[in-house]
Amino acid sequence: MAFECSQCGDCCSHLGLVHTIETDLGNLRYVVLNCYSGERTTVTIDPDKTALFLDKDLEMSTFAVRPEACPFFRFIEKKGYCSVHATRPGICRDYGCWRILILDSRGRRAGRIMESRHLSSDDPILLAIFAERSHLLEKLPDSDWDDAVIRMLRSAGYVVRT
Image 1 (spheres, rainbow, N blue to C red):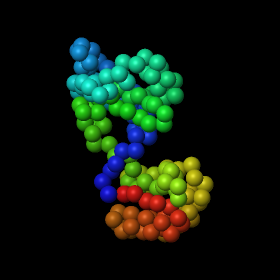
Image 2: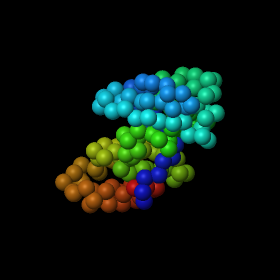
Image 3: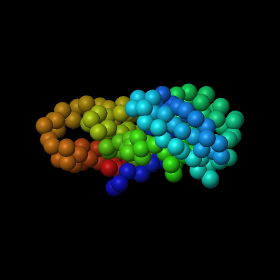
Image 4: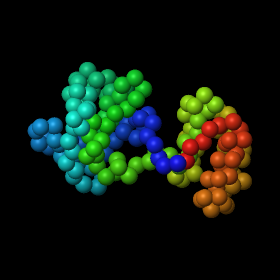
């Protein structure tokens, strides 16, 4: 299955440390500077997100909860929105936040396995299963490792997306 964004906002929650608005070009167009690479990207607020971007109360509530968020990110009722999605910088276009997404039996996110084979989770049962069994799979090549981890997680009752 191809990467599908669940709009959790995790990816954008720290991108304010990477992206800054360098220039306001007017008409909801901005030059964004990537503070690490020096790359500059001209972005435009998506027409359907203009109200979100301009809503100062929403901006303040987003940054109160996620103070390091990208300047174009807005968070409403547990969903994140990129206000420049159509013209977002390349680093954002290329981002996939997980290698394997793990859901509990009710469909809620229980954890993610990142590209480095690292499990990111707060689920104590999932953490214990992974700690107990994953070392047995370390020497497998990536595709075999993924398949073995998916079988392991499914046998424990988790739903897995790749």
